[in-house]
Length: 266
Image (cartoon, rainbow, N blue to C red; front, side, top):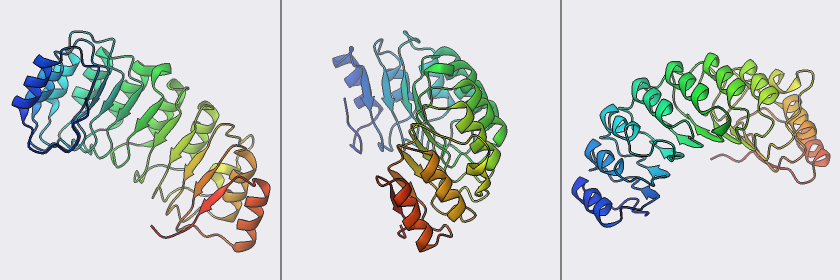
């Protein structure tokens, strides 16, 4: 059931939905500002729930997430979106990861209270199951937890680390060495990154299809040419705000004639 942005719905509406459709496997309520922890309590009563989206429901707290942790069928829930639910902390994320070890997709972008502690627990619990993770804007995350994610979650296909200023070259080296299944990586405004992240001996990312380096201003021609050469299936490379020259842009698209390099202002 998708009821995103139906702004007049309240907790009572979610209660009615759960009673009328007890076999729901998907419940998307993104952008419904009135919903509180009570809505998650009702959702936790759905025994077949696999996919839940309460992004931008900013009244949610750890109390609501704990209801999901205590749900009737903790092995089922695999896709969770708490985008910009800023009152969620490490404590409830850890409980959720422990009770739902089969999480495949998690979006906690903008959850500013999340730190290495919660992310590390998620990585060690979900391990090979986690294929998609969005922690964009989780500003308290450091390279330490990125290394743990890379070493435990080797099946990762999509990862968004945008706007995390602590991301450095070594984070990227750890990722390409440990996550060969990666298809989409977003590093927008990770301004510590340099060409060196992609020039290390052995660099190759065989399945990477989309790479976003927007406003990574220390990445330039040398990094772009390495990426074009050693990411053989790359189709989209976003490098707005990077220092690039026209001859090297032409050379990169000659190396990979399927590659589109976006340098337009956004």
